[in-house]
Every structure is written in C-alpha cells, then in structure tokens.
Length: 422
Image 1 (cartoon, rainbow, N blue to C red):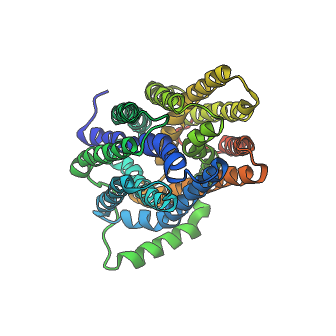
Image 2 (cartoon, rainbow, N blue to C red):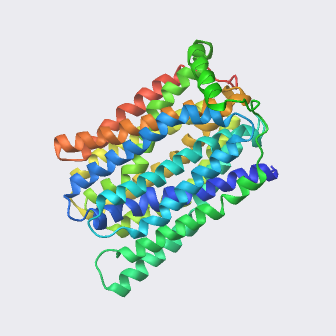
C-alpha cells in the first residue's frame, strides 16, 4: 500500500515523539531520577514520588484536553496548537541536563513540563488522523505510526545507550554518570524537534469548523452542548469508559515498569536491554495488529491485547517471589516480550477504532474527550500503584492492583457496538 505525503508526514511524528517516550519517560528518566536527582531518598519513596508526578502531569493535560480539542477544531488551529505543544516539550527536555544531584523537585518540575508538552501535542496529532487518511485505511495508518515510531526511536535510544556506557567506562563508575544522561536528553530533544517538521509542513486540517469571532466563548459553548448531547453518542461514551480502564493499565506499565525493575534489584543494563527488546519487537507486532484488524476487527484485536496485559500483570506480581537472579532476569525479559506483543497494537487500534466512530469535523473535540479519559486514567493507575506501595511497603501489590483495570476495560469493551459491523 503506497502512502501519501500527508500520511508519511503524520507517521513521522510518531517517530519523533516516540523517542521521548522510549528514552526519557520509559528508560533513562526513572533511572536518572532515582540514582541522581533523588539519590538521598529511599527507593520506595522515590518510586512513589515518581508515580505522583506522573499523576499530576496527567491531571493537567486531562483538565485542559476538552477545551483545547474543541478550539483546535476551528480552522487553522490544530497545527498552531500542535506546534506550541511540541515547542514546550522540546525546550523542557533540553533543560533536563541542568539538574544537579539531590535536586529531585526541580527534576520533577522539568519532567512535568516536558510531559505536558508531549501529551498535549498528542491531542492534536491524534485528531489529525481523520485529516490525513480515509476511513478504510485508518487502522493500518494508525498502526504504521506506532510501528515506525517503535523502530525509528531506537536510533536515538541506541546512540544514548552508547554515550551512557562510554561515560560509565571513562568515569570508572558502577552506575551511569549524570553527564551521560545529559547527552541522552539533548539527543532526544533534537530528534523530537527535527522529525516534527514534516507534519508541521505537509499536513493540512481538511475537516474543521469556521473560525468564530470569539473562539474561546464558542468553544466552551460547543463543549457544553456536546456534554448535554452525550446521550446521542451512547456507543462512543461506552467505548470511552472501557478505554478509560484498560489504557490506565497500559500507561501505568509504561511509566512505572523500570522503576519496578529497579525495586527488584535488576541491573540497569538488563533494564535497558529489555526496553530495546520491546522496541525492536514492538515494530512488527504493532503492524501485525493493524493487518489482523483488517481481517478480523479492531475490537477483537484490542481485546486480545487486554488478555496479554492481564497475563503480564499477574507475572509481575509473582516476580518478587523469585530469589534466584538468573530466572528473575529471564522472566523480566518474558514480560518485555508480552509488552512488545500488545502495547503498540492496543494503542494504535484504540485510536483508529475511535476515529471511525466520531464526526470528522469535530475530531479535535472528540479526541479531547479521548485524551482526557486517557490522562485521567493515567492518574488513577500510577496513583493506585504508588498508594499500594506506600501502604504495603512493597511495589508488587501495586502491580497486582492494575489487573482489575484491564478486566473492567475488557468487559466494557465487549458491550461496544463495532462501527465496522464485524
């Protein structure tokens, strides 16, 4: 299937922002925070602070998403808002190397700003899906975005890993020195900024509402009217509720997995290797989910992904009971395989499944609701895991609590009518 220029440019933004998720959010930032910025804090407490910060970032995005999405539906706004959010995220990431040992609060603030920029940009990026492709190609294009995002982001990730190990060898240190992390953050910011250029240059907002004289007032009025009319969109509302639960678990695992691995005394090199495994296998798995969705249905493949995550969380709960380091490492790699199998597919197909259900001219508004639930979900998951960790003094019970979120999401999704008629 040949791709159009707008489709290619849209896919390349997934390559751009996936570098931030992989290098900063998932891999290096948890290690940098716990071993450098928060090195004077107990490991369990640092994990809890990290979880609460993720929840605060999600709250900010969630509260602003509906109004920003509605404003983005007005002619020309979608691209302006996307550019502003990208600029905020890139600049905050560029400032992360300024963190000094023990400055854990400043670290969390800068990471929070970068996270808000990243998540805010995704509102408008997701909404552009209806502008760049057709209804029939939506599953595959969305899957291509996640798939190429996985493999493309490996390039700055591997460069960052090489810098970290070089810095470690030169310093003769047991762990990674702060200078290595600084270079990794700078590489990530540069990659994110450069690969954002195509979508800002080549993608146009083809579905929009005419720009009003008072955009903020009209956006609020439209948003309130949509809330009142939610009974007309019962199937969409039911899907959003299901999405709220199961994506909560997905985001929690993305944000907390390496912090949990550190709690299990796994070596930093092992953690980085598992992340690399997820990226390499996530590329074909995400695309495979998209192809299977065309043959079966997106709904069926999302349910398959939820089942994989249920197995993953149960294995994560059992992991601390294994004392032998060898088998523990093997099982952690197995958990990485399960994440690779389902993560990209469940995210990409949720996006395209929702895109097929909504009115295209109001994509920004509806993806605002989509993102608000996704971000509020990301509040509950890390917050739930952090609270369980604080109460039990063991993060394994926080992992077990996530299982209920996947079960609830899967049951609700079974009740959603398939817009594809399959």
